[in-house]
Length: 334
Image 1 (cartoon, rainbow, N blue to C red):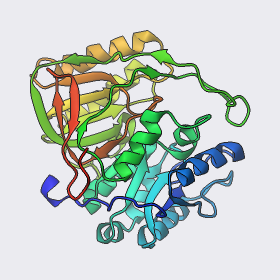
Image 2 (cartoon, helix red, strand yellow):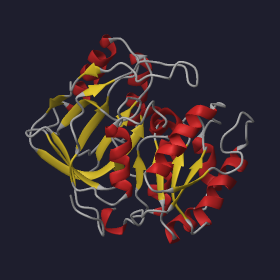
Image 3 (tube, rainbow, N blue to C red):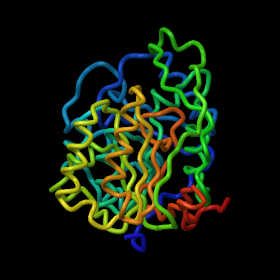
Image 4 (tube, one colour):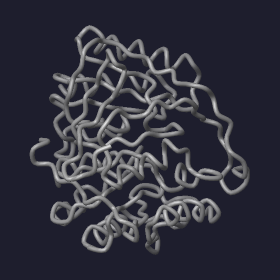
């Protein structure tokens, strides 16, 4: 897989970053929208918000797919950042012009339900995309995005990928109502509290995203093979039973048959018992297989949120307790 991957060109100052809403329409939060757009502009990019991408009017899958396809074929657009996650991005997959993205690779950035786009892009276009922050939840954080969210995303957009992902020392899951209460920084808790299992080092392409969205692609042509992959997954579910059901389904379908390693994201606004339960169930599946496993990673529904390039080669090192990315072909080294 890695030998045939295509990488978008690193962004330069003045390049156009477009906002899209493949899943839910974001709520009308003008202050939040301004903050997110301002962050991208102050980072050196021109920002384009297509008509309909932000607003309260629901749109059909065809309308949302048309928005993305227009951005795929526009040579001036060099990156597409999702406004927010949500549900049912998978409905767009049969309608997307993956050939256009293959001809002109550009960054697609997002997480949660945007996982469906990432895995479809990898399997159908062979293009690396970025599992990372979306505009309104993360890039519009007050007063600026968490550095491990915003600045890490920017370094990937600039082509500087090589090396170990940073350790996050503080995180938060405090809820502040958008455009009402979010006029102060959120309270931070101390970390890191990653937990490692297994020994040694294992390398493979990084593939994953939101657990429930991965499961929804089973049996479709849009789920790439996980054979030899460093699988990462996260969930915003607070039900251990539902999480275990998704894992059971993927396991019984053979998706976990030959993984190189496993990375599991931090739980989201859940009691401590959930993290304990997830650890138990993950180790029961992978702990005796000799592959490196890390839990409570800062990916997905957590702030700050690290960016992961989907399809890119990575090494999970349980002894050094690091996830190390290979050098990006054609990009700058760190």
